[in-house]
Every structure is written in C-alpha cells, then in structure tokens.
Length: 122
Image 1 (cartoon, helix red, strand yellow):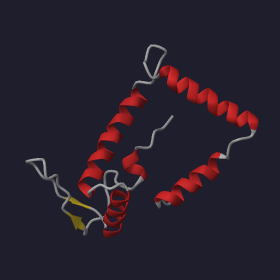
Image 2 (cartoon, rainbow, N blue to C red):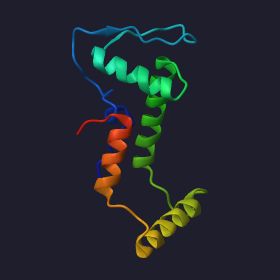
Image 3 (tube, rainbow, N blue to C red):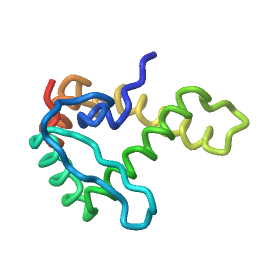
Image 4 (cartoon, helix red, strand yellow):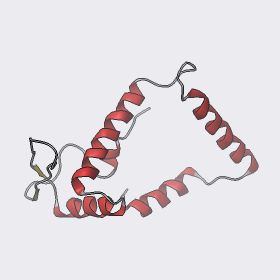
C-alpha cells in the first residue's frame, strides 16, 4: 500500500516551482532555511495555518513532524502487543457495523468533500 505524506497532500513535497521565494524560518531555532515556493502555495500555507491558529512556520514544522510519524507508522504497523491496537480494532469494528447498517458514504464522496474543504486539487 502506498502512503501519501501529508506534506505531499498539501503540495509541500520535495520540488516545486522556481522563482517564488518565501523565507520560512523558526524563531526558536538558531538555523534558518530559505525555501522557494510558488506564491499560490505560500498563500495556501498561510490560509491553512491561519485556520488552525498557527504561524506558517509552526504549520510547516507540524506537517514535517506528522509526515515523519506517518512514515514510521507505515514502516512499523500495529500488532496485538501495541497499546493502541485495541482502540484501533474497536474503531474498525464500529466502522464495519456502520457500513452494515447503511450509515456510511462512498469513499469517493468523502474524498471529494475533504478535497473541497481543504482546497486540494485532484
């Protein structure tokens, strides 16, 4: 199964357009790094950060941290010895019961709603 990182899902994966520069650095770090992103992507990062009450710097830092956590999760899946296993199993069983009762939406519809909500293009 391929995992798409949260960074990639909002367009902050490696690469990007040249010619647009935003100095994104951390006030709490001695080192700063300048990255080049498009003006559209910078605006999107500002909107997403503001919606969560964060600075762009804090938002990008969180995305990087979450991306790393997801990559670790993908490499080391849960098993019955993990403390979260029972919680995840119960959530999955609850979801299956919802499907059996007809209390669910098609995945394509949910994904389309999430894309619209977070401004993610196809």
